Length: 487
Image (cartoon, rainbow, N blue to C red; front, side, top):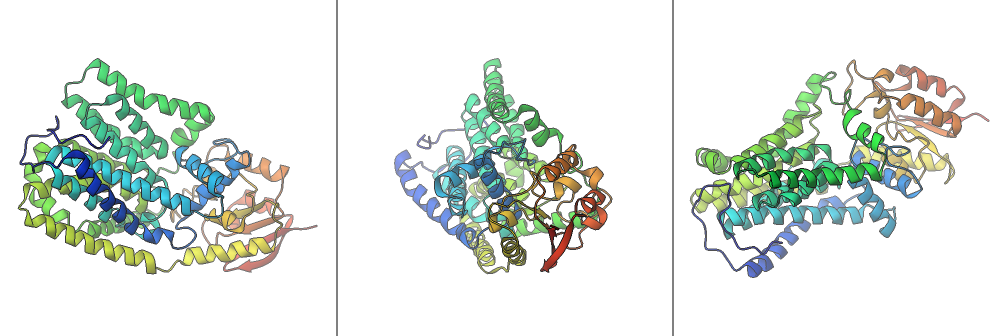
């Protein structure tokens, strides 16, 4: 797929281009380089059992699916199915005790993204631009808090699909382009934002009815098949219509805004080698790279969607930034390229050091709670952890007593939201009825209140207080309260 010799793209004006290398020789040299760089930049991801609650959520989901659970029925989340299925497949082959196979999959995903971007850049601006793009992408891909950049979660596996969509659109392969858009959406909903630059490119090349139909069919068919493979109504609810309260700016506005600005600043540091040349070449690039600017703008809109501004959302900006940075360096004097790459490499080294040495207080807390759960429950005994750390179930090797793996689905608490929109009435529609039914049918012997003063604690959730009436306190661990059912 990547051996096609460079030729002018139909979407950019003709610019100075390097003499192209022979196709196979070019990739034989570039692929090992990028593979090595992808491995180096992902080294911190292999430190420790997991990085964030999203990894824990996926690990617990995968175990539930392996034991007969059904996605969007007895196993629920607000995300599409591809990454839970990937975790389930990895656990089926390698066992569920370690996330190392998923970390290797994340390395492969980053490498695939870098190669696709390099192919796009090489076709447009020549061999040197292709190499520059691939290297720049991998250097800036770790430029966030390690908990966001190093985790093997949705955004990392979404990026190859978005790059593939642009790669196919650049070559007018509209059916495959639509399939790549569907793959991005089925990995994470905001991945569908790549449809905006794809639509622009389709319009720019003189849209034919055949091209539009191929793109539409390629995008619709995988989504339809995924819905049929799960539960169509549940798929629609959990991935599209059931998150209205979650996607709201109300509650902790200053906290959320500060998080957004902080994560933007962190990514800005990672892109310190790109932003100066990109600013200098801005006028030149406006006409030649319109679809890349549109891709960046639509990705920024995807980051804003939901008003939570978590750091891992910003990973969606890195592919268009790498392409635009390479385009800027291509029209600037050659000396700028070395400066940009050196600056980016130094920034990358800082983030890798951060990832290797940063303390992990949340993980330490969760491990202590998991140890207590193992001590107070039998191996096949379901337990309930009332909190926002679903990885406790995975670390303790215990079965969840409910399909709702976090208190967020039952109270709308997420990411520090502590304003007026936290409570039972802001839960996912129908969640409390299902939760009470699960509790009545199979009440867990052990309940762990891991709220630690957060606004979703039992003192502020009346239904939970009633459900805890038959329980007595068995102890506390690092602020978490353990309740054991009375004989």
